[in-house]
Image 1 (cartoon, rainbow, N blue to C red):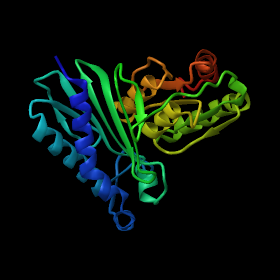
Image 2 (image 1 turned 135 degrees about the vertical axis):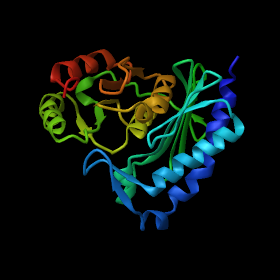
Image 3 (image 1 turned 180 degrees about the vertical axis):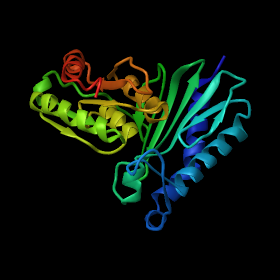
Length: 261
C-alpha cells in the first residue's frame, strides 16, 4: 500500500532543493530564454535545472517511480506512482521578476492525483495536501472561501499561448466579467488553485492547461473544500470554486463559451 504521507515528504525534499535558487533575485536578473510554441511560451535554463534537480532528488529516494514533467522528464513507473512536475509554473512572471510563479509537484497513484505540493518562492509559502488529509499553507490548515453570492466573487483565470484562442478568451470575458466582482490574471495555474484553496480568490477557470499545470493545485484546492470540476487537461476547460458558488459558476463558465475558447 502506498504511504501518501511519505510521498508528500518526498515532494517536500525535492522542493527544498530548488526553492532557494528560485527565490534568489540575482538568479532572475541574468537568464537565457528559449521560445517553445510561441513568443509567449518560453523556457529558461532555470526551468530545466529545476526539473532535473527535482527528478534527481525524487529518483534517489524512490528509484522505481515514474515522471511526467513540463520540460520533458518522462519515465514509466514500476510502482504505480508518477510524479507530475512543473519546475516553474509562471515562467513569464519569473523572467520579469514579478510575483506569481511557483514550483509544483504532484504524486499520481494509479492514474489519480493524490498528493500535491506547491511552493511560492516570493511569499515563501508552501501549500501541501494529500487525499483525505486536508490542505495546509506553511503547516496551518486552509479552507476555500464561504462565498455564497457569485456577484461578489473574485475570479482568477489565465490565457492561452495561441493568438486565436486568446481572442476567443477575451470574448468570453465580456460575458463573465459583468457577472462577478472582478477577474484577476496572476500568471500561474498552480498558485491560482492555491488561492482558491486559501480563500484569496473564490473561483478559477482556464482552458488549455497541461497536467503539470494543475495536478498539485487541484489536490490542494479539493482538500481545502473547493469543488474542482472534473474536466481533465490537456485541452479541456478546468475550473475550481468555493462550494457555495460552484454550481452557478460552472454554469456561467459553460454559458460564456470559455470551455471552447
